[in-house]
Image 1: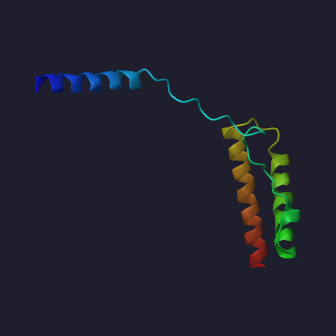
Image 2: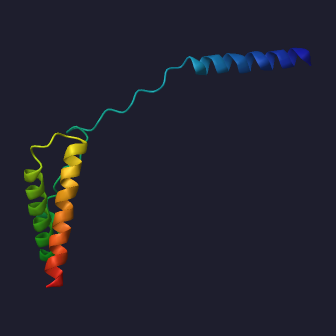
Image 3: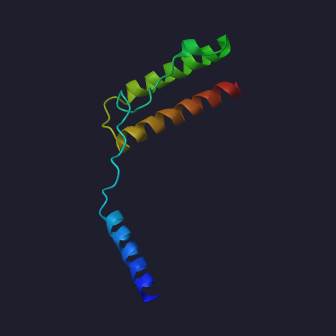
Length: 99
């Protein structure tokens, strides 16, 4: 019985050591194009004219916002600028709907 227990302990210890020394798998390579999604979708693929018009309007507004914030550095400063631009746009839309 002691021989069986000793053999089992040796196998368990050996497999534990073998697994501990195995290097972790390499991270997957990023997809081509840097792995980032395109900022703008292709509006020509919209299923109908109404969705295409909304897509084009959204892209126009986004380009305007990006233009206003282009002098900001990447990171917090740029995110803050984009949020402010988005808030202004929402206020403009709310004022238009109120009329």
